[in-house]
Image 1 (cartoon, protein in one colour):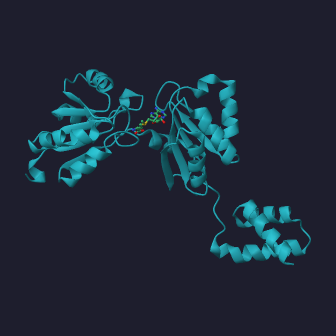
Image 2: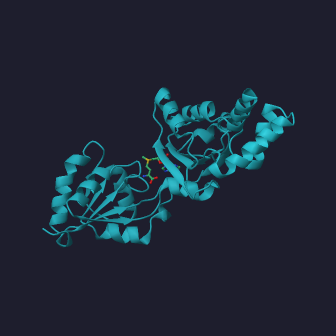
Image 3: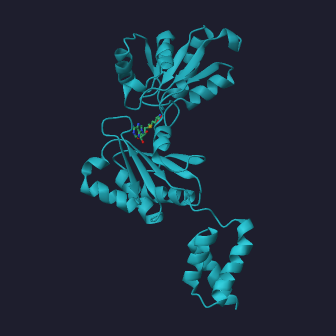
Length: 284
Ligand code: SAM
């Protein structure tokens, strides 16, 4: 069998709330396939019903995905076109499908994306945080120790950090962010494309405060976005900035104030300049 003789697996993004977000191309694709592999067939049956489509559904979730590969490859080899959808948004993005797509590609099958809704992209597009580079880190671990270790490991990244979170763990995650990145600016996108869509902005402590005032703010689905770490002291500015730091100290400015002035004028973190100022003082 050659790849060109086989059918195509279409990876189709579906709405994350608002059904109008299903693209005309996604609808045409779903209409055209012989079988739809879906994370939760009962959930997806409602979407197909809404579209007036009567296409066979096959369950494909994290527990049976590897076992479905042969079956789906056989269908493609027979020339059938297939679709993969998840409960919401883009398949494979914190959803099943990676094993299937990897295996089918390895076997030379054609896999085609039908792009559309994705919670992290929708959230970033309206949050007002830098998006030229970002780091999507999926869900944080459920256990506090592992969660803190993960946040710590990401804390020095200068890119905007993006996480998915459920209503069960939103408080715990915000509490961990508060403990480890207390001053950092966060944007919380909730219930995107749905009736109660909300964007909240502030430190983790401020967001927890908003939730305490209004318990509705803890309901629904969340994307947590965290401003990246302030830029590290760059090599090109180090010399000038260090000269400024030394000059301030020589003029009798206190260590803390000198560090604050250098951070403000030259960039970098106050804490780092403070440590350098202490070292310079110690060396005198
Ligand atoms: N594949 C999906 C996508 O493309 O965004 C993500 C699936 S993941 C299992 C589910 C998580 O995505 C939720 O816990 C939440 O963090 C996020 N999410 C999904 N829909 C959302 C929405 N309407 N508003 C905010 N976050 C959402």
